Length: 207
Image (tube, rainbow, N blue to C red; front, top):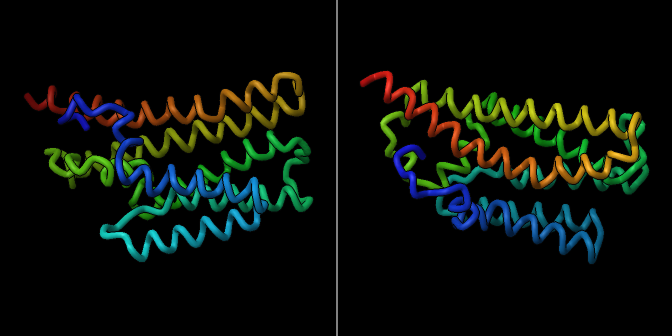
């Protein structure tokens, strides 16, 4: 990403990778959910992910679809009377469940050496593989740093939402909103600029 300053954060969302692994499954899940319920939405999204993996011409990370499926499973359990941490409010449950899902998926992919953000970025921006840092320990470490920040931030988000729901319930809806898309967009921006900053600082030190 440091090699092409003209590529912005929104470039990822305009890429075929984003359409196939984020936009389509999210839209598919939500449409099916509203018309047929959580169970059908899970089945349809899982079927789509299977087709994507079978017919894909390149190795794709299904981590985003995994996030959708796990979050959807948590919502399905909630609708059937299962909760955790004594949470009764649906928006709070979905927010905390989403945080736990992100932590689980990001931890798993980081432990197997395939950080979620790295895989998505490389598929969307093939020029990353032309970076002088590609394949080096430095390159891998930077993406693990990005993944760790996502894990920590979502962990803090979950804790804050649970505490607010218990101690200051009148503020919890605002917190849930701010911790949804605004937080995700901030983390996506961080995931773009942090590697660029780290690699450019290394280049300066080696001059």
